[in-house]
Image (tube, helix red, strand yellow):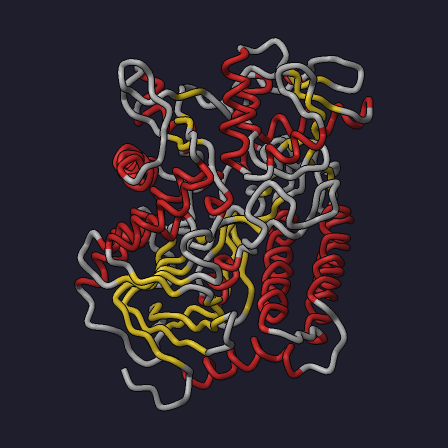
Length: 548
């Protein structure tokens, strides 16, 4: 398509995948399996982008090998809950049917899954799930590079170091590509596509921090700002789970890293400051129960007895603990071994001091059973949880986007004046005479969100949070960038603010406690009528919100 205005370098493809993490990898593979052209876009690099780029120690899979708890109905019963908007059909088509295939594909590319003597995968139980669904990975630090090779061998084309700015829609409201820019050179980019898959993850991680005070030393990928939610929302898609997908985990004190699944499933006991094991009061599976229950339980006990808290593994099987400390934990974060050496951490012989980590705000684009949003031809792969859920959900979104692209002759024109305005707005900090840095704006956000939107909150506090986040959004016009890198961070900081504003609006509507990681002091009880999802979207620039 020839453009009438200078919208930068133009690329054309059948399917555009925005985001090159596990979800984007899955989407690219699913779309390529339909025989269409695929372009996969990320502000980072395919080989290291996304949460999996930092390593991963487990892959979740239901494999029909260990009785009823290892079959599709068990998976559907556990995850197909109204509040999450996951239907049984979505669970089956978008997760279950791809679990084994993608695990075997990863294994073909050298991912080392633990095996039993009979050749089956060695799996453990975690997070309150009814069966042993977690396959151990012993070389998790290499996982993303192996995923990248799968994508390249499949024939998808990566567009590295390019940050998405807007999802394009044509004159009929159908997704038809995206605007982006190269974060190393400043080059403006317009991508035209028959279908688009949003695969930018679900979590905004830099809206709070742990005891390190370092927003990059955290549990999950610190470069995920939930930009997919922002871009989808601005394109007209509905977003959901912003009120319920607010997550935290336990972390080693003073060191943000994943790994609680392995610690809990090893048989560890969490001990309070008075040496009491308390988790059986909060979950029938104790420490190996639902993650939210562990956070709420720890928060409540913290209010009673203060700190410290410990994970005690001295009673566990020595071989299990040896694998956990020296294979699984370093597979989730490469510097874990260095940190353990420096601090004298030894799972087998001394309790590990832990803390409640940073609170993550996020959600997802609402999709139907074909993983399509309310914007025609815009699909989402960032739906399910964990590396497995991201990769499998992305794969199904890619399959559906690829099939749609096969039957499409292309789209009508998009608003080129709006595209130019988007580029101008994105590059404004380079021209700004303001003195506000992205660090200052993000730090102000981190001062607001944990204080008013923490693990205990009220309408009064959330109302103040909304006012303060709105004020900061206005101050964002004073952002100044002196380099391409600073410009990328400025754009990220504005995305974080937008997600925070949406999360506050959604949380104020959920007038209950007990369904999420946080509790409301003004609505302390569970409300059965609120066991349903909340949707937020825009119509002609006007914000809308409604229970689904």
